[in-house]
Length: 340
Image (cartoon, rainbow, N blue to C red):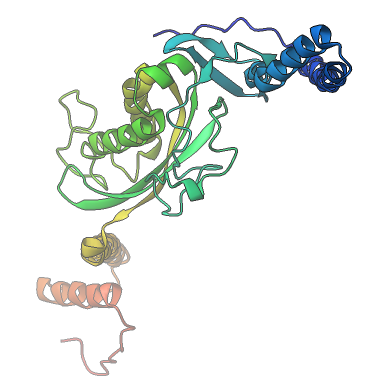
């Protein structure tokens, strides 16, 4: 269903003032009709009294068609079940009083700015006591809103459980689709965010891993949740957009707000990272030490300061490596006797 604009003029104030005058006149006419009826002028007083009483009884019905819209608000109107159109421009309108506004998500609360449930997640709270007067109106907000998806536990492509949370900035672009194509567009959005997040996260490892293809081109790459956050967020945005287009929603931006290993494996993964860092540091130290030993032997040969046989060279290399690669300062031993 496509959105169409309801043709209504911004004459709500004129209608309101006109009916106020008519109600005042009807009250005066009721009094005058009663007086005339008692003064033997029943042919005038009784019809006047009846007309004024009828107007006072049902004359308020057209006032039900008065609608006030603020900027960035819309009102979807139906007449006896038929979609009549959407009012988008701010103003004071007088529409058909039998038209009813439709917004199935009026009482739905999401964990987002200006629309937050007490649970702190994207779950819904529809209790009437928790719904404000403004929240129960049938108006649809056209503002950009932020959905805080909270933290979810998902297995990455290596099977490691990770906790990840995203924030999605979205807005309603087609009110007819949002109201009539899905049962509740806010619930629909929250569920599609869950689904899209799981579909994308399971493609990536938490950290860079070998022989993992995250782009789908058949070649291993260095994509990861931690190192490719911008790329992952963009793919999540596109995945959500593809799912909610039929609901008349636009996803403006998606951002990862929280990313960590699940608590049950966090300590193990930390030890693994520490071990990897220690191995890399030791490798660098050993490479530097070997280079320094090689340079020392070359300089001794060039200067011809001392002649060393293979056994003494091996001993010297061993001592230098112990000194250069050790975790503690070396304690020198002075040889006061002959070298041999």
